[in-house]
Length: 289
Image 1: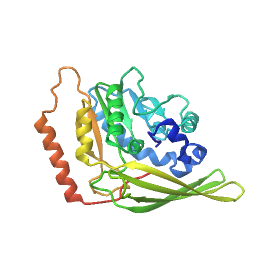
Image 2: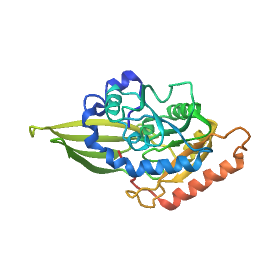
Image 3: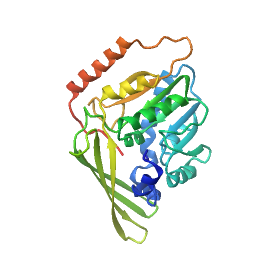
């Protein structure tokens, strides 16, 4: 997951995606992505109008999803951070890698599937989120599908902390993640990350990163996906790490020529159903870095 900030802003912060990039596999090991990647594959196969063959991953980070999807999909991986692309190239040498901003990149070709994983959470304004969704529409072939997975939506957000990390190759990482909402900036939340890094000699360094994330309602997600030209859809996220708390991924179906569009009334009904489901589910902490 890497940020959609401008290049200048990006270089000034978020060490995890720069000089700490080689530690990233200890934060979220590749093996941890197998279950969710299988879920994404099922969604793509279910909702594409033809057998999916190509995937564009916007905000691909270290390429951990692609490591599990490349067996059946030809993957093109886009990320803003050169260090993360270098990490992914080592893991996925057979995949195409492109440096770019998910809000503005244009590759000039379409894909059966477009994936915006948790990197889309860095879209901290409605304008930035609209731009990222527009990019996905531009690259989704007719009959294809785009998938968006924000860490959290406003209906399920709950301040809190999580811990984790792993060991490998004589090194170890542990982290504390602290989520909270700033009073000064509506529509966002802050994730403060404290990292404890132990190198091969046993020396330990403690570092901090602050991630500012967008926080939008389900209704806003569906509205912006529809406004980009997609048929919007909310789907329950099936993963063993989450309970039945209303956590969802959002799909954008790009209709093939001759297919009927979702009627405005049906879109309104879908938004209403999401609002009702949110009220029933209540808040929950279900994000994962």
